[in-house]
Image (tube, rainbow, N blue to C red; front, side):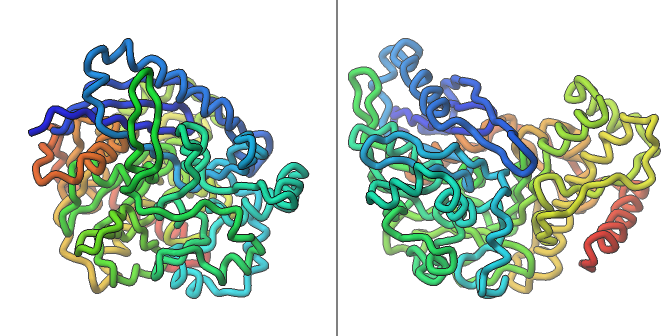
Length: 486
C-alpha cells in the first residue's frame, strides 16, 4: 500500500471542511470553518459566495502547519459540494454576480409550470423529475432578475453553474472552468444518454450554452491548487451525496445506502441500462472518462428534502431547545407518538409536490417530545416509501441485503433501529461521520480493491407492531393529503 495522502474539500451548508485521508481510508486530519446559510424570505436559501471561498482558503492556509512534512505526501485534491447549489459569476474578474442559491432554494418554482415537456420526457432526458431544487429554474431567475447577470450576459462575460464550478474557478491557479456530470445533472440541463448539455432543455429554459461550464469526467484534470509551496492537481469534482455513496468502497449489488443529513438520500446501484421505478431518480454518481465497464456508475435514488432541516424547523416552531441531546431518550420513552406529514423543503421522491404543507396529525400540543419523535419518524417513513418502491416496484432490482447508513442523523440509535424494523433488513452504521470525505478519498485513490471497512454498529430488525401501525396510518394520511396512492 502506498503512503500517499489525499485531500478532500467538502463544502456544505453549515461549514466548509478539509479532510486528509491515507490510502487505506483512515482519516488523518479534519479542519472546519463555519459558514452562514441565510433564509431571507420563504423559499429562498442563500450563502455568500465570497464567504464560502474565504472559508476554504482559511482552511487551506492552515495545512502546512497542521501537516508538517506530511504536506509533501499529498497526491491530489477532490472538491465536493451540495449538488443543486448554483452561482453566477463574472468570468473576467471572478467576482460573484449572485448569491449561492442553495439546493434548498425553491424561489423559481414557477418557471417549471411553463415547460412544454412532460415529467416522463424530462426523466428520459435527465434521469430526474422537474423540481425547483435543481439549477435550471434558478439560472432563469437570475437571468431575468439580477441586473449584473443581465449585463454580464450581454457583454459575454457571464458564467453560471453549480457551486462546485465556482469554487474550482476561484481556487485553482488557472481559474479552471469546468463541471463534472454529477453536478451538471442536478442543473436539469444535462442529457443523461449522451452525457452532454441538453439542447432541448436549454431551449425550454432559454439558457445559452455559452454561460455553462464545459463538461469533464468526474475523475480528470481540473487544474492545480497551490498550498504553501506545494502545487496539487485537482483530480475529482463531484456532488457530496455522490461521493458519500462510496464511503465503504464500491457499492455491492443489493446494498441500500442512506445518507441522512440536512436532507436524506437513499440509493441502490443500477446498470447504465436501467430505468428507474416511477417517482425515483436515476443518478450518475461517478465517471472516469475511460472506455470500461465501470467507467460510469449509476444508482437509483430517492430524495427526502426535510431531514435534519425538518427537525430544526419544527424544534424552532415548537420552542424546543437542545433537542439534539434529548431526542435519543425521547425515542425510547415516548409511546403516544403522533404523525407528521413532512413537506419541509418540498415533498420529494416519490410524491414530488413542491408546495406540500407540512402538518401534524393527532398531535398532543402539550407533548413536544412526542412531536419531535414524530418528525424523526416521518423521515424514516419517507425513506421507507422509497425503499419499498425500489424493492417492490422495480423489476430490475437485485434482492436487497442490507442498509448502510451515514450522515448526522445516523448517529441516533432510534433512527437506525426504526429503519431496520420497518425494512426487515440489517442496518449497518459505520463509525465514520464524514461519509462524503471518505468516499471522495476512495475515488481519488483510484477505487482500490481493498478499502478496509470501518468498524461500526449493526441494528438487527425487530418486531415493532406499534411502529408498523403508525407507518400504515401515515401512508393512509399521506395518500389523502397528496391524492397519491403508493
